[in-house]
Length: 253
Image (cartoon, rainbow, N blue to C red; front, side, top):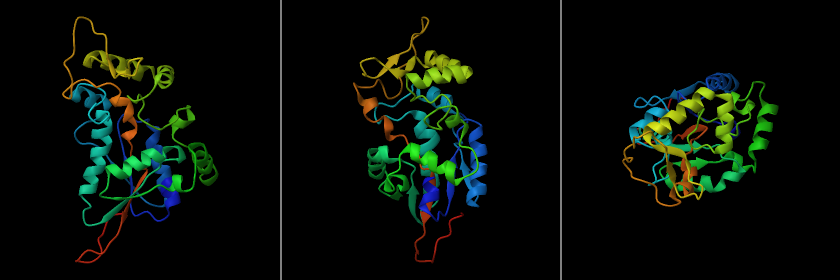
């Protein structure tokens, strides 16, 4: 909805991850028909899915910046790579943050000073619930399946940043994913969940085997929780065209 409300968007981009619900691609195709434009699909060429990233980095979160390795390498790096291929244009990102995510919007601006940013949902004072209602009144196709199943976000199935309620839901709806993530915890020797006092990730219980310390070491007290919401991505990407010395730049879209 953010891109739709923003008006004229030059290029729409979707960052695909193997762990996302298969229905997400159905939704992308429906969106293409609705907006009358092709949506560029980008994927990592280095890591296939979340578990690849976790195994490569030896844990579920980097305490130095609060990012999950999958957020960094499957989303942020892919966007940065796209950005590096469009240096002849001033880029404006259109973000789908709602009214309750104003602090997240501020952090996004601070972390990405090289680009301009628009927040159509915040500008209109729209909550997530209002956005869903607006979508249903505007379009005649279904939301992504994860919303219909009762999840708050259309994240990867088995998001490593999910809470206890989320994982109980996953255990019922996607037992194979739940079991796979549990095995991964034992494999790397770390848990996705924090200790009860919130002082960082727990060591997972292993059978006579202790996994090596991740490359970044262990999390200092409270650091992971304090910066956990830094992992975000735009709903749409909007290159703003400016006139370089050789004339107007041409960005596919």
